[in-house]
Image (cartoon, rainbow, N blue to C red; front, side, top):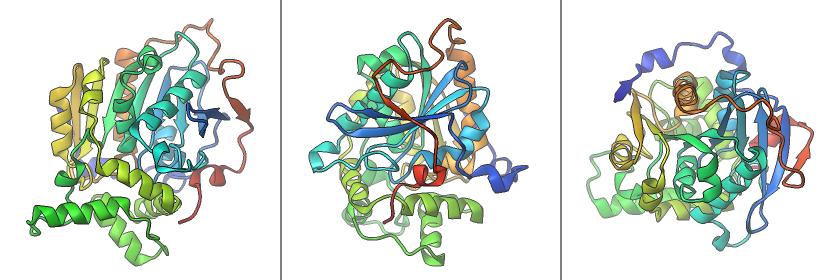
Length: 347
């Protein structure tokens, strides 16, 4: 089933618009150690006893990326968000070998094992590289044991360069297009300084034409906070991405969501994934929206997540440990300096 959400509806001003993209205060923060020793930061929001949702952000983003979606989902749901390695507060790995889809799967596995006690399940939602993380980890026993359903938002399983539409269609030479788009991914050049030119470029590249100045400013803030070396290292991984096998391993109900004007992972990826999923539960296409759907239409994204929770995630056992991590599994710390915790570093 395909659901279309009108872009005009998605852009109705929020009643408390000024607060929508501010960093939400987590109930708890923690670090976990991934398989190769990399420290990964995560946050817990909402009621510890509520059904759990785990959100994985994409390339050049951080936990802050999910701010508006977290506000839509809490306090009714328990929300876990984490920084992918090299982003936000998570450790920056040294050496290219520590940047891989296997590393993404290792990090998610470590977060799930720490945040979800044995027997507790969650809805997993990933945007862009976060969706790729879910595909990469689909065969991991710890992930399979905890995933009740999945949302793949604005993502793809492979062959990103031939489909990317940042260059306009009038540039028809496919080799030129691939070289240009690959350079966008792998370049470690500074993005800044923030200003009208950078904001216009980001709006064109990753947002829909109707995105608000607030959404453009928020996107710019997040993307420019990503450090250059990890940005380039992850770009090299994305340029060679092949997760078709992981997509086929997704054995739980899986929804797909995409903006119709997404230039980085255009709707062709969403349609292709939907055809290959083992348990597809629908495609949501958001007219006029770009790549940053959780920023552009957090209400629509949260709505799909709530439907997955309602349909596929049972209420947690009240006798369970209430969301606390297993003893010794991770290092908790007080929630402090919220802006620093989410923005990572500078380019």
